[in-house]
Length: 190
Image 1 (cartoon, rainbow, N blue to C red):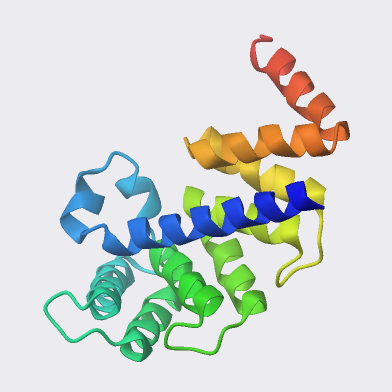
Image 2: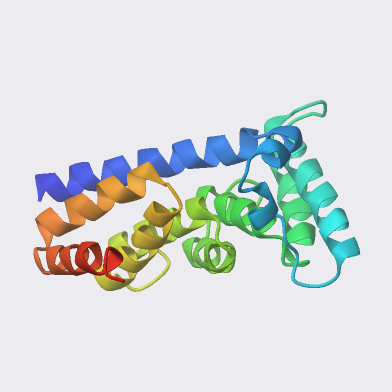
């Protein structure tokens, strides 16, 4: 039981770190990153993407207190506006607001909802966090298979903590070692 508690603490600490990283990334840094183009999509029209990026940037500045007084309520409102355009980064940020109860009531189910939307658009941090929720059964039914799935997707995008979590999952639940071995064998196949 102690090992499970230590594992849970590691997940929560990593989630906090991921939250700070995403919220602290400035728009200029995000645009210079090679994955930025993949993450910068809105599900509707190109004009919505521009609007959503701006709304997300305002939300980020409100959350961080960057040039404005820190205000989580306003941050959540701006993230919500951008998320309604289908903007993946805002969906992720709104999930963070719900997970930590910043500017909104703490609601792990809503965090899972928004992270699932961002994860489906390829946001590795959302995939990682969604895997954590499935592993712990927070806001979603506990499901190690889904945790494994989302961590594998995040790991494929370079999320190191997801790779570590997959190894830990395989140690705790040996049935998931087979999945990793089969994947390694099929990756090299023509």
